[in-house]
Image 1: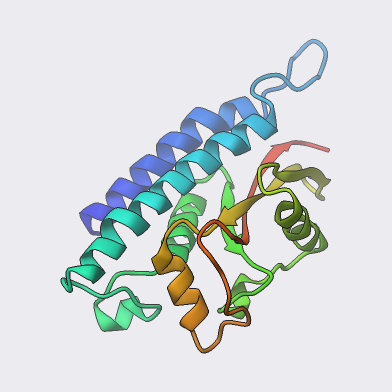
Image 2 (image 1 turned 30 degrees about the vertical axis):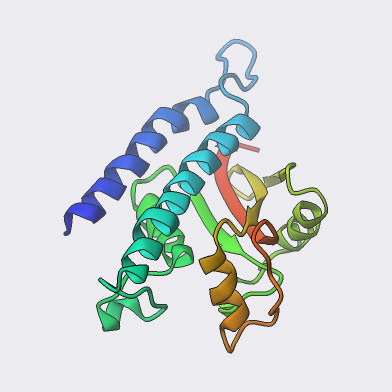
Amino acid sequence: MTGKVVTWIAIIGTIAVLVAPNISAIDKKSGASVGVPPETVADYLRAVIMAHRHFYTIHIANRLRQERIVDVSENWKTTHSLPLPVQLVQETSEIAELTGPNVRYRLISQWPINKANAAKTEFERRGLKEVQARPTRPYSSTVEGSAEQVFEAVYADVAVTAACVECHNAHPSSPKKDFKVGDVMGGLVISFPVGKP
């Protein structure tokens, strides 16, 4: 395991340990949920996820690509290059799932280059429409599952650099070719359990 993987596991594990007990805390006397509201937890998670992604995009991937030190590629595992920012999010989410608290997150889009990044549920499709119309306001809901309630939130994913826009606009599989910096390119979906139904 590389030092980078261990660092990501430590970061995500720390978040999970700090947040997870507060998500599902139940008052023993009343049976009511107590602790940090799920909307606040999702806001915290989003802030950390997007800060890491933006830092990676701006200060690592773009910089090393511009200086011709190493390329960024969707085939990063076989080409010995860096992963795309969307792949960084995907990989760290998979690592987060291994830590146990069942926190999941992923980037989705109405115009995915990779069809696996399309909205998969009605909640995600509705969330993409809502954050496209109101990018500063997340779309969220608590869903009754068979074993537990799950809080889900979709946040606007905004193009932060010209490199994001250029890559999406030039990619042969991109269904949209006119993104600009500041445009909503899709959404970040975050989900985690909040208790028993």
